[in-house]
Length: 296
Length: 238
Ligand SMILES: Nc1ncnc2c1ncn2[C@@H]1O[C@H](COP(=O)(O)OP(=O)(O)OP(=O)(O)O)[C@@H](O)[C@H]1O
Ligand SMILES: [Mg+2]
Image (cartoon, rainbow over all chains, first blue to last red; front, side, top):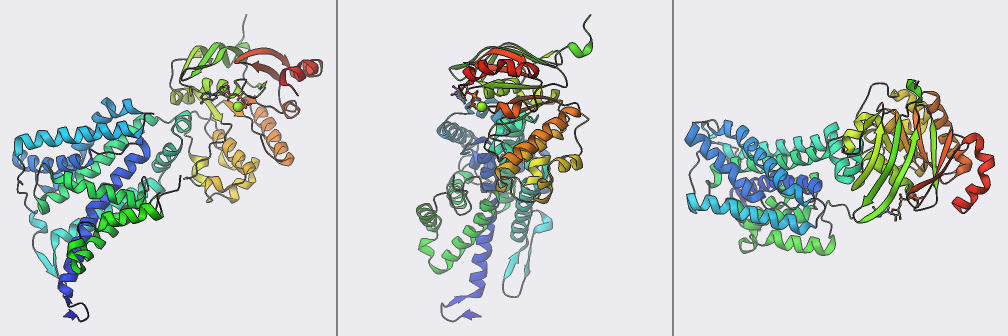
């Protein structure tokens, strides 16, 4: 079947839509973590892409050193990287509390370079293969398009994780502590809540989400030391568009921009690499706080 | 022989406090006994808010001694101090805009048994009950003050510190807050109050301290208020 006016097959259209949704799923997971971290720590976490890569490498090591497959990796990699995040927060980021944003940005940027450098030193720049788990191989014919099972799983699973995170932050008691501590940490602490511990765990949680995204990406993109470095630039654009620190904003914007990017690939392929940045520029001009950001 | 009730619940000796480099409190001495309502008076900038924040452990640096139930707290973080049973209702009220009224009310954790049950808090402040799902900062100034007081009554804290609870409020709401303070006192709460409005303070306070330039310069009981009126006018410049 063809869409007559544009001469583009629906097969190609839906194919790109799915690719867009998958990219969107990664944008959403990564920008969600960045938003949570920015809200509590006031730090723009430039190490996010590197920790996403570490998550993917965790999956690779778990399989090749310990024989633990994909499903274990989905559980263990976020815990390992989350623990690494806790150490980073306690030993480094905590010392930056109260200083200008710039220090956190420089520190996490430096960390990203170091982590990526170490992995590049041992693994070069080429990709290591990571197979799709047997349960998710193959695909289904939906009539209008062919849906590879693994890709469908990535979209659904990230959506579930994003919504669960949103629910946890917006609808639970723990989330109320988080939101309150984002607004006025010293008062929340004066109510008897251990805010520094909450901040540490928030960073661990945020980078744990990045690691989860890394595991999801391993069977799609292979495992490469620089897999996060290119990707994270687009994710930062997504965060800026959605509005720094907005939870729902980062999720919606992540999926939306993935789809917009995919559609651009269909209708104007040359622009597909820049469309996110063009949108970012326009949003910054019209609504500097971002689409979902509160005007401070 | 000292009996248990003559031991102050809160005892400040030579308390000093700094915000960064600025030295604000220069040795504050005061004590509050269990069940008392004590009011801290003083001009703008005298250091009243800073005194409450220092008791709570919320200033950058403090020195001297702050004892609560005999426990020295000068080296404790504010979350640990809160868990001893001290709660602050801050001058700016501190209602969270990203939380609704119910979440604001339920935010402070229970630090001790014996806090007021929710229905008693709603008896004191019926307005809150009707606005539970509103955004916290959408409440009127008076309602926000009720919320700020109400949320610390649940926690079981025995010492409540209220920083200018009547500031900027209509007379009828000031009366309601006065009524609340008397009721809380009758229930056995101990209250350290900061007030500029000593006409209001005189309806609730047992004793007064007067602050100037980060020090306590005078103190007297409510029964001595009339005798001290002239002095007080000079201290407060009113
Ligand atoms: N965060 C801060 N950083 C630096 N200085 C401060 C800070 N907060 C208060 N001060 C200064 O400390 C002094 C005491 O202030 P404080 O707020 O304790 O006074 P106050 O007696 O509560 O006054 P008011 O009646 O106006 O509330 C003032 O000189 C004030 O400028
Ligand atoms: Mg004050």
